Image (cartoon, rainbow, N blue to C red; front, side):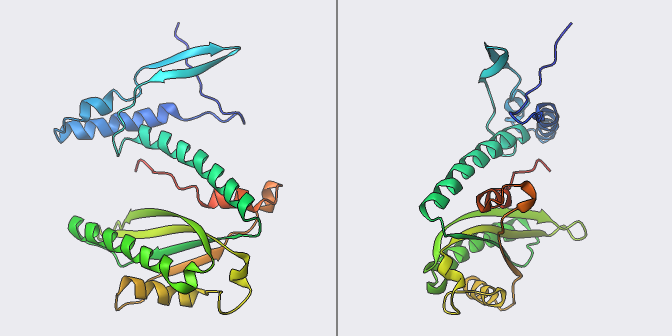
Length: 234
């Protein structure tokens, strides 16, 4: 009789190894159909797991992952690592600047209709954000930021919608005067200027507030939750 192991977190949640491996095998099948050589490496990702017994628990101490960019299993593992590191960074930022505040900013551009157009649009998106972060009114209160790029596909026309999600950490003085505060209309104007486009891009900004429902009322915990963007297998 074989035994099925479960990977359980400290709060009792079972990690979805089986689901991620099924997605990994499906991805390997797609690569095989397209005759990509890396299909073999992807299929063998996480096939062998070696454990050591520590007290009453088993601890994973050795395995082999394919580390391919679109592998669902590897991206899931990477997202957990990123989330852990992010918590440490935000915790340290709050210690250094206890009066700092978090903003969640979404910056968009018009849709792209081909792979080449998407590639150039993403390059322009990154360049424009670099300009935006250096504008005097933005930079004078900016303590740091976390930026994540998301691409979605329009089901009706197959176009790509590429946009940025940005967690901004700003000084408390950001909210104290009109010379420092930037409302949504002004964020839109600054983003349009950075992009150098003749249309008005969609911009959304909101203050990250403490999540009182979780019982902690911690602004830090809310910032961590807001910034938790995973790479999805779809």
